[in-house]
Image (tube, rainbow, N blue to C red; front, side, top):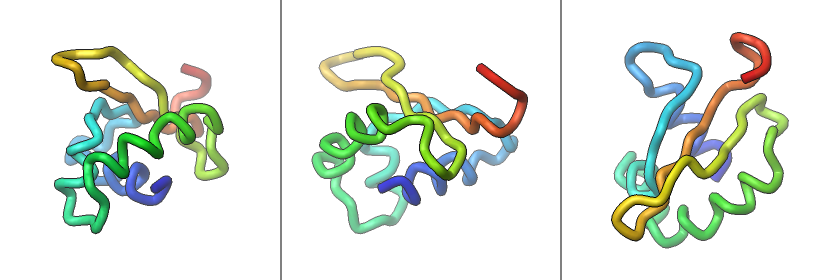
Length: 80
């Protein structure tokens, strides 16, 4: 799951060190993961953040009964 989140961040066409997403964005990215699977793993990634890969996953907001998450690369731009 961590790799899928890193790939989502790396796929940002502008090279941003932060990206907002919903579980379906990862599932739609061609992975074998479903939105439900992603949604069940994201809270664990949030609890373990910052991850060894240098990213942090956190809840941003709730919208239309769906969670919007933010992934940010901590090793770029110092502390956030």
